[in-house]
Length: 240
Image 1 (cartoon, rainbow, N blue to C red):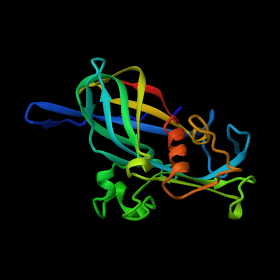
Image 2: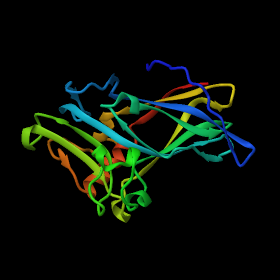
Image 3: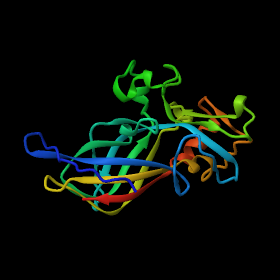
Image 4: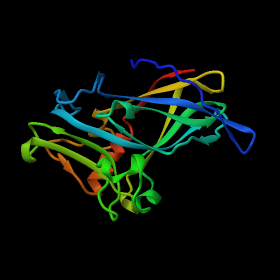
């Protein structure tokens, strides 16, 4: 369980009469039931041993859905969650006061930002998550090793990208909250989420390291991996 931090609600006026308040989103990475640690050997769903040396992905366009089915967009819009950067795994978003039963977000960067020229902040190419203006952003990245990999140095390299038409790997995630999230000026709130690396290898498609240890282009394999990892998220706790 992650340690809960004290959050001070931040209020700002929108259109003169509607306040936004901050809620913290905190991500924990795991492999199966255990916390992810770099250079530790794990076994994927196909009983293949592997280690992880790099794991990061984009979370974008976060929103919350009320019991009435109304979806409310939060700000800001783009975050790079990186296991190597502990601070990146916990961040604030602002949303109007309400009660919500679901959280929604995209894994990846929308097509507009992929063709908008040089970006800053989370979208800065210096973060190592950008290919070219033609192929765009790497939406999610998993690197490591496995004795079953036929790649040099037994490497595992999954750089998943593609935003054009049939190559689009950007995925919308909708998760039900275990308890109602109550956003208000009086109650700081936090949502804890877990992301399971093992989901990259199974679910919608069986991805075996022995067969496919390398993906660095948009296309069929990238689409299959993305269809798997969109299932890696769960909400583990909500604190109001």
